[in-house]
Image 1 (cartoon, one colour):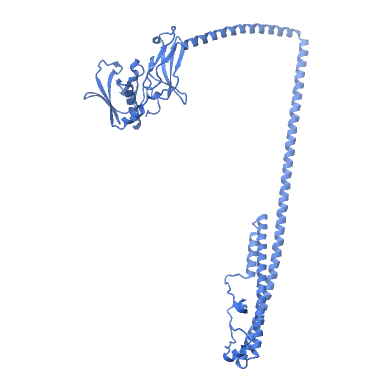
Image 2 (cartoon, helix red, strand yellow; image 1 turned 30 degrees about the horizontal axis):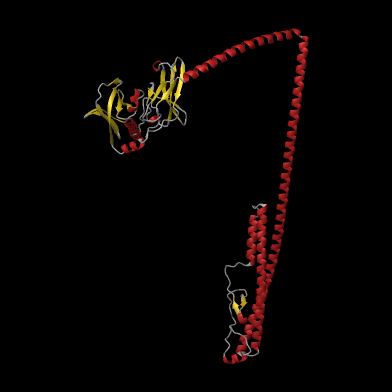
Length: 495
């Protein structure tokens, strides 16, 4: 780029001016954009080939608005018009900036033409012709710039029209939204007022109906009473009949009162008898696993227990469910592991009178028994020394020592090297504490190895007896067998 200065003449003498071709072909059909840089130098501004013209932008926005206008709600349409208005304002601003750039281009062209005119007067010959061609080219560029400005003015006019249209449409949309909102509010208020009027009318009708119904009822009662009075005055014989009936009812009432007094006296006498009977027996013994409970008479008038019917029950402390203990019909009962945490109850029936005795609380576990059982569980086979006191319901005279083996899968009773019975855990096997048997009941258990073979075994201590029951039930539970007594009293195995 050549910079024009006062020393231009001297410079032209030293350097030859490069020739300018007449058939110049420009890359663009419009005048290029320029910017004035430092020291009044002209700098080319790079154009973005992707930038759309103002007409294309306006046409695209208009098409989008027309396409969406039919399927938008009033509120959405107003919002779209506001966005279009903002876009139009933006386009107007861009047009203003382009107009300012166009003015700068005119200034640059005028400066360039003045410089070429000044250069024309200082050169001669072929250089002068080149300068004249350059001046003609600048004038042609000025004409193109003027045409472009005309197009810009037309686009600016269209943008202004679109902006005014969008502004008017936005105002109309806002007005329409406000009108619809006001109309909806008016309808809501009208509906509320109508509902309130209906409610008031219904309440008023209900009040009138209640008042009129009450008044009608009172009038009807008065009329009935008056009719009865008139009828009684005209029919004195019925009055006499009613007096006789009333006298007979009074006599019957007196008789019923006497009978009621007799029944009350009989009931009081019966209650005193029951109170006296309920205090003629009591439960003795420790309410703990490893001990036994005994029914003891506490009055001289207590009948013999051998003449009474006795039955023991266990009661769940959570559900209060009463469970029969089959075979427990003696005056002595030794709690077994199933009874731990439950309340024991015994019913005594004598001469039609029922006496019920209950433990003060749930049966407590034996101290240290749980740890003892956990230590034995680690063994594969646990042995206990026992004495067979009964076999198949008959007393066993021999008091020789036997060995009871409680294993993971089976139980076995041996005498020396002889195996008396050996059975795997099954649903036909039964095992529980002896239900009766005097003071030794806490040390004995009942075992039905299989159908047709049962024994009563006496252990060396209460601890071993309860440990054997708990171990057998635990091993049977591992084999999916619920090992219990003849009543099958528990739904789960004792662990």
